[in-house]
Image (cartoon, rainbow, N blue to C red; front, top):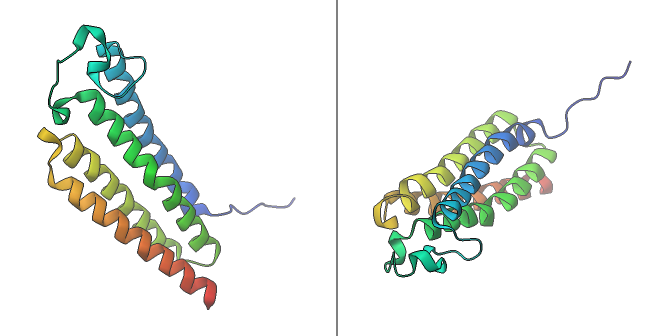
Length: 149
């Protein structure tokens, strides 16, 4: 009997927690849509029943939920591709695992300690943004180095 070894086991293992967090963000958006009766759009004011309820966009819970979900999806697909390419080219699995954990922490900080913070002004936005950009540059460079060596 032939045993099939897992392909990209580190990236594959981290796909679950990244997906689980995305589902949480998606549920938050759906909850706000249901709560304020907004079928389409990204603001509570899109609902006639709540027109003008949140004149300050930073206080609009639907807009915040939509932005948190969208910001996550702006970054994670590319990050997972970069991780998979690095792993496929020989990245050390333990180091990649720590890197994936750091990326998830950056993205959670961006939303939970940034966007969902009062006024969307939490320090998590800065940590999450720069951490994610640094992570992508680092892993892309790591992957490039592995490919060229």
